Amino acid sequence: MIPAWLVELRPAIDAELTRRLERAPGKLGEAMRYAVLGAGKRLRPALVIAACEAAGGAGADAMPAAAAVELLHAYTLIHDDLPALDDDDERRGRPTVHKVFGEGPAILAGDALLTAAFEAVAELREHGGAAASVLARRSGASELIGGQMDDLAMTGEPALAELEAIHAKKTGALFAAAAELGAIAAGNRAADREALARYGMAFGIAFQFADDRDDGDFPASAAARKQRTAELVAEAAAAASGYGALGARLVELATWIGARV
Image (cartoon, rainbow, N blue to C red; front, side, top):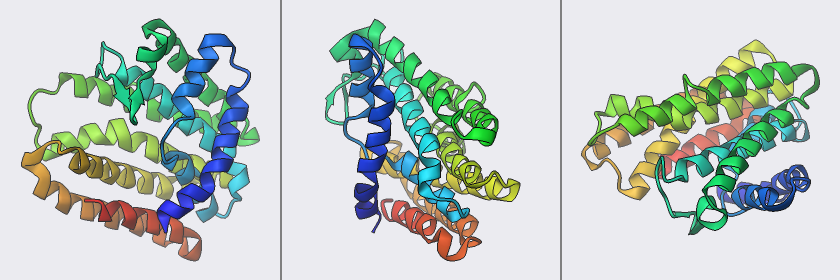
């Protein structure tokens, strides 16, 4: 079962994150650790590990990349919560970083987590450059940050196609990066990178559609989203099926997300 698997993985992931954050000084370090080490399933780093194993690698080899995607994810949440963007007071049941530490320290903590993410992927030895390139492309102006800009410009409830395009950038891009980074950590084969990035994008959009349902967002497209999620889950499962038994965890992950909608 996926929830039990995530619980099993979390201590190793949190230990890796703690090790990377323990040398951050003073209030800045406190804000970084507050943002990263609180609640959360660690789904993105878990996907890095599952993708690495599907491509024939060892989960331990994927730990730098797994840490990187969680550090980067935490940076995006800090900045998204700021008054200039979503203006949220709570995140995962507790005050947001800027409410606890102030807006200036929150911005700097986000900046520091972003740079720490690139420091982490640089540790993938001869594949560090490829990993950094993927992380930069997926988290930059054409995808993740561009998706946040599109979200800011959105008025009213968008059509399903427009909503999916925003979700592909804001959420799908980092899941696609996670899966492709797993492939890079396993050996950097082009075919694995392509297949697993495709998996991650489909999975990420389906994940965001599930969150929309849980939050009661975009009610006009609820029925259409349910159908589209089924298609995305099938697409993700097809991308993982070529890995046989090694890809079983990825298929299970996709099915688990599909069951939420």
